[in-house]
Length: 203
Image 1 (tube, rainbow, N blue to C red):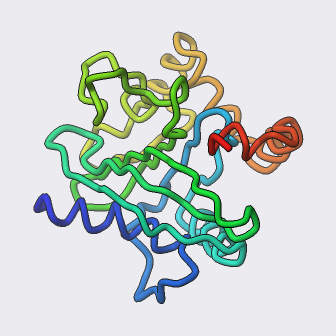
Image 2 (cartoon, one colour; image 1 turned 135 degrees about the horizontal axis):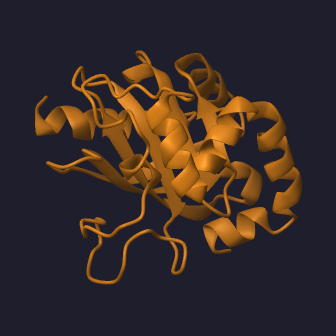
């Protein structure tokens, strides 16, 4: 796909969470699309196309707007990378800065969405590497078996995933959560505490 394609659809993801945007349709999600949000967020927050569309629709009721976006294309995965700022009316419109990455398959479908707070100590990148281009940047999308093939399809209990989970605690955690999505999400939410937004947004 063209570089413009990846930028357009990375940014379009945030339209689904902005209640001021009238959607013409959903971004091109793959059937097994994953959304993973690092601490202090709730880790596995969507697994599968139907699930991500339903949870994103709920966010528009919060409500939130995402007026500040800088999305760019990169010629290595993740092809789409964005710095954005959310504003939530429920929190007096205070800014919440986020760094987010989008992995695509060969059909141009989004297979993996990975998010971090854009705050010191919570970003994946180091100083001097604003777009996380260094070879040693730690991202789950770079180690999950399946994301690198043409379809970008995860086989949750295939032999490659089993081997990777034995060697990588984050992959093992992902598999556990994908098998127990609702329970693990609820437990993560309950454990987040009252300062959840303050920590994640830097308030």
